[in-house]
Amino acid sequence: MQLSRSAFLTVVRASAVYDLLLTAPFATPWTFALAHAQLSSLNRSLGGDALPDFGPFHVLFACLMGSIVLVWSVLRLRATSVALGRYDGVGRFLFSTWMAWALAASGAPLLWLFLVPEFCWGVAQWLPVAQGDGSSAARAPFTSAAPMRSSRGG
Image (cartoon, rainbow, N blue to C red; front, side, top):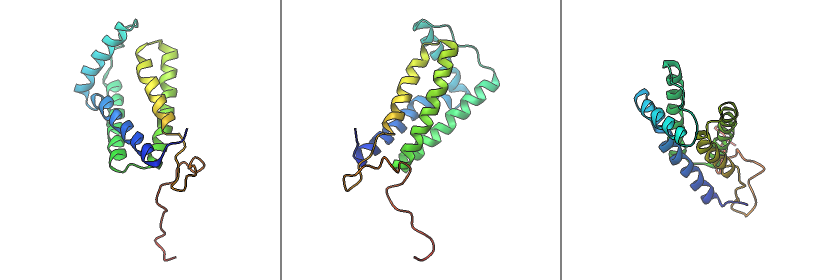
């Protein structure tokens, strides 16, 4: 499957909006406390245990992650590019790996609700993108659409 450049950029924007909506509750200690309670309840309703309580250091790292993902999402919305989509795909594969690790270690069914979409967004952002001439950009996944210009004359 090969996407047109405009379809690929739509995927990058959609993944950024998804991240904004899903990650916003992780950005502050107060919103995280509410999200943690809801996620714990959802995990129990899916047949898992209540999520463990978080101490200040756990909340700190959750909020750091939430904050940086929000900034990264805004960047992808304001400067959408094939290159940023490719980098986001790499990040999603990393996140998916750690989610799979946590799933294997905990068996928490809630993780499936995060792992599957995360991995699918990663795959979508690694699909080949058609160039204007109809060729595929799969061989140069981190190149931007516009060529870099040298600051030196030439």
